Length: 243
Image 1 (cartoon, rainbow, N blue to C red):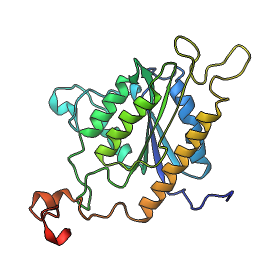
Image 2: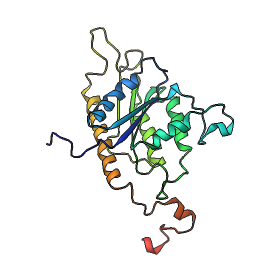
Image 3: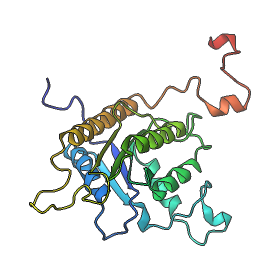
Image 4: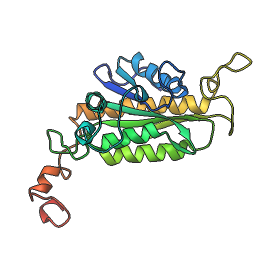
C-alpha cells in the first residue's frame, strides 16, 4: 500500500457550498464536518473556496439572474462564477425533517438555471467537473439526502465518483450535533471511525477523479454534444454511423 499520493493536486480548485441555515458568525455543524475534508484537500495543495450560502442574497428561481425576473438583488451570478472556477463541488447540508435544507434545495435550483448552457466543446456546462456531498444532523436521513443531492449533481452534468458522500448523525431526537462540545470535554462525532473513513474516501475519490478529468481535458465530446443534436448532426441510436 502506497503512503504517498499517486499524483499532484495543487492545480485543482474545490468549492464547498455550506447550505446551513445558520448565518455567520454562528457555529455551523455542517461546516465542522466539511472542514475535515477541506483540511485533507489543502494538505495536498488544492485551492479551496468556502461559501456559507445563507450569508448571501440568493432568491429562489431557475434563471441565471433573478434580477431580470423581479428580484431586487441576486448574489448567485457571482457565486456561479466560483462554481465554474472549481474542478470539484461539494455541497454540505444539515438534515431537516429527513431532507436537505431549503438552502441546499435553492442552490440546486440555481445551478439548474445554467443547465441549458454549454461549454466550449458543446457539452452541458458542468461536464468535466466532480461533485460530492456532506450531510449532518441528529435525525435519520443521511443516505436519503445524499441520494437526492448526488442525483441532482449528476443530472446537471457533474461526475460522481464512488463513495461521494459522507455524513454524521447523532442519537435520534434532541441532542448534540457534529462538533458540539460534550460534558466530558470531547467533541461529538470526532470519534466516529465510520464518518472519518467515509469522509476520507470521499475526499480522495473526488480528487482522483478530478485529476483524471483535468488531465483528459474533460469527458470526450462524442455522443453528448448538445449543439450537434440541435443542428441535426445527431449521433443517436438511429444513426448507423454511430452504432
